[in-house]
Image 1: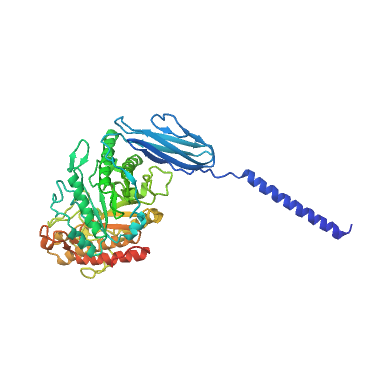
Image 2: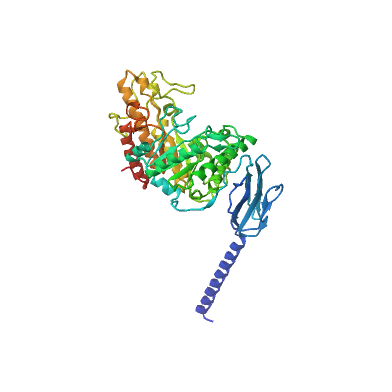
Length: 540
C-alpha cells in the first residue's frame, strides 16, 4: 500500500466520521428541543343572553386540554376535554329568572402547561325583552368596515346637549334641530355629526323602560336630516347610569341599557352604514380606575353590543362605538391596549369583525377647556385650578393677527398662560400613542368631543390680550384637529364655529357660520393632518 492510498483512506474515514457526528448533533437537537406551548385563546369574558342562548369558544391547542367544571351549575358545555388541534366548545344557558346576574369562571387547562380563564356572564331578566321582531342579517349598504368609515369622515360636529336636555330639545335654550342646520354643515365640508340623546324623561312606562314612540320618531327624523345630506350620524345614550354600580345596581343598569338599545336599534334598523350607534358618553362606572371597575364597564358595553346585534338586519353589520371610561385617553392607554391579549379586562367581544370604534374626548388642559365661558369679567376659577386664557407656544396658524406664540406678556395675566407641558407637545404625544396602540391595529379612534372655552370676557379693557385669547382658542381647535387626523383619529368639535341661533342670536333663525376664522383654520389643519397620515377625505 503506497502512501497516497493511505492518505486517501484516512481522508475518507474523517469524512465519514464528520457526517456521523453531524447526524448525532441533529438527532440530539431534535430530542432536546422543546416546542413552544400553544393554546391560542386569550383570557376573555363572554356573555349568555339574559333570555337564554349560546356562546362559542373556538381555539387550537398543541396538547390535550380539559375544562375544570367545579361549580358549573347553570351553564352547559358541549364538551369538557379534547386532544390537540382545533376545538369548539358551545356554552348554553337558559333564561336567567333569578333576579340577579350570574357568572362563572371556566379554567381551561392544557397538558402543555398553559391555562386560560374564561369568565362567563349572564344578566338577569329584569325588564321585558324588546327584541321581539329580530330579522335576518342584511348587508345591503353596510359593506364598509369601521376603518373605511373613519377614512371617509372629514370632520365632525356635535349638536351638543340639544336632545339631551330635560323636557325636550329646547330645555336648555337651544333651538330645535332642523334640516337647514345640517345643510349648513354640509355646505361647509363637515360630513359627520354626533347627536347626544337622553331617554330618561321620554319613557311612557318607567317600570318597563318603554320609550315614547313620539321621541323615537323625532330621533329618526333628525337622523334622516343627516342622511339626506349624505352625512355620517352617530347617536348615543348620553346620560350617566351611575358612578357606582355593584350587585343589583349593576344588574338593573345593564338590563335598562339592554332594553333601551333593543328599542332604539329596532326602530333605526333600516338606516345604512351612515348611521352609527355609540354605547355611552363619559360614564365612569365605579370610577373605572382599576381592573374590577374596568371589567364592569366592559360588561356594560358588551350588553350594548349584544342588544344591537341581536335585532338583526343592518344592525348585524353596523359600526358600533364604545367609550373609554370617563372618555379618558389615560385609561384607554392603560387598560385597553389590544396588544395585551392575555390581560384583563379585554375589549368587548363583537361577533361582527372590524365594525368597532373606540371613543375618547379631549379637554386638556381642563383649566383652558372646561373653566371659562359666559360674559362675566370675573375669572371662572375653581378649587382645583385657575382659569387659563392662553394656549399654544408655536406659530402654526396666523389667525386674528400674527403671533410668534399665543402666550401673553402682560404681567397682569402671566398666571393665565398654559404651560408647554400641556400644549402642542402633549397633543402630539397623546395622538401618536393612540395611533400606535389602536388605529394602526385596525381599531379607529373616535374623538367624540373636544373644544376650548371662551375667555375673552375676562380681558375686557385689554384688547390685545382679548384678541390673543380668541386666536389661542382658534389655534387649539385647529391644531388638535390636525394632529388627530395625522394619527387616524376622527375629531368631533363639541360646540363653536356654527351658530344655530342665527344672525344676532335670533331664536329659531337660520343657522349661520359664526366663526369663519376658526372654520378656515380647521380646514387647513385637517387637510395638513390627512396629508401627513397618508389617507383620508379632505375638506374641498
